[in-house]
Image (cartoon, rainbow, N blue to C red; front, top):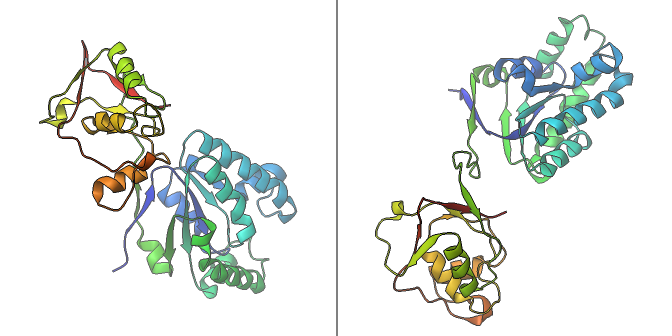
Length: 299
């Protein structure tokens, strides 16, 4: 039985890929909000008063890229309704996704030539398209399927026939791991620690945290903190900030110096920064906010 749901990241740039007559526009209108769809045909209509005026394609795609960029800049899921069968046409869109830190998604609508030709024949504005156009699109599509992952598409959905396309009834938008919108603060912002243990303690005390050396028995007693990645870089006493952090819970952006000590904690044979072996602390340090719970994050 064909699947009836596709999963995509909640913030993504979705490219519909298929020949003319594959049903991309119908698919998009059925499963996405009208405002989420940026159509190459609609852009041709805006710049030339004719959605089928191929001489306006250059201007139309400049407008399409502009609209896509503005939506991604605002953190909005965006669907590109165009043939997208050529790699050179997909490249600038993948580049926009990377520029705005959005995951690119490919949804391939793969229908037989005969189906696409029949659909075009039923549309007065598409009857003039010869069979060679669809055949060319299909050939480009088949070549594209081998390279989509290498082009940077993180999620690829290949719907191989009309039945699989029509079976899709909903799009599930998976929450991103870094979506922390429920964390509303207040926040304490702490920059890179650089291994400066005494300075870290002084800063936390100044912020109102009460530092104790008692083991943590219930992590639910700890407030959420986000700390900058450079915790164990060279400094006056690099291992100590790491020991301080063991008793804390929270979120920390990944940094280039966290992996060695992490691997050191998980097993032998991995050296920590400054050639010091990993030594788990016997007791954790707890951070208690006074007088109210505080939260901190890194810029």
